[in-house]
Amino acid sequence: MMQPPVHRYLQQGLTLIELMVAMTIGLLFLLALSALFLSFKQTSLQQGGVAQMQDDQRMAMTILSQVIQSAGYFPNPASATVSTALAADSTTVSGVSFTAGQVIYGVDSGVAATPDTLYVRYQSAQNDGVVNCQGGTNASATTATYINQLSASATTLQLTCGLNGATALGVVGGVNLSAATTCNRVGYVGISNVKFLYGLDPSGSGSVTRYASAGVVSNWSYVYAVKPVITQLYCFQQGVAPQSVTFSQTISLPNQQ
Image 1 (tube, rainbow, N blue to C red):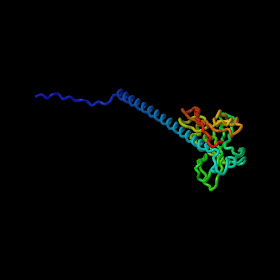
Image 2 (image 1 turned 45 degrees about the vertical axis):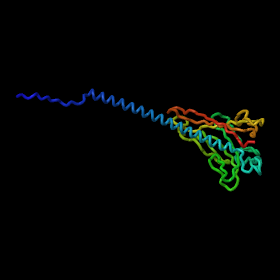
Image 3 (image 1 turned 90 degrees about the vertical axis):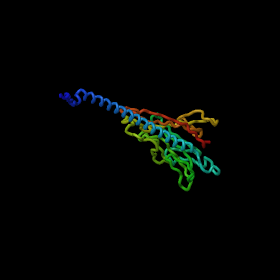
Image 4 (image 1 turned 180 degrees about the vertical axis):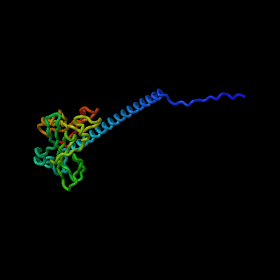
């Protein structure tokens, strides 16, 4: 009896063409994943940079608002007036003179790209909660007078604060100094400028009629509001100059009389 023929199947591997096709498909898949990863990374950097810039905006305006709104404060109105509490002073801060009762003073740099300087004066009793521009309070046993010096540094890219003529310190900003002229990465750079406009009420009507720079102000008792305009730098792409982003806020002087 004859046996049925035995069929032998030879095991075959991938041909060179099939291998090349598989490698090409795999390479395209990896390239797509890489592009997707880079896109996610870029988006994450941008979102992180914007969030950091917004945090600095809030922090800078919080400091400016607290200090400016404290202008003219003194703890003993029952026994003193603003003129007796805040006497004439031309020695605490070199080159800056306050008349009796004057609570605010500004210096216009005269150059758009150069920061202005604002001086805010008030008194503070021990632990009364009045916060100065460096975030401190009066912990001494006596009433103290503070002159807060507010400006910005184009060198350290920070909002700066000095107290009673001492060297000003950076309080907000200064994130990526090396990107001040050319962006080395996408993201927030720092604070490059601050300009101050002063809300004037020359007639004493109780309403601000116009805003002007410090060089135009002839009588500081006419100032009832301050409008800081802060410039920040942000890198939207590498290899180019950072772009300027400005924001401002109008801050009233509740203690101005």
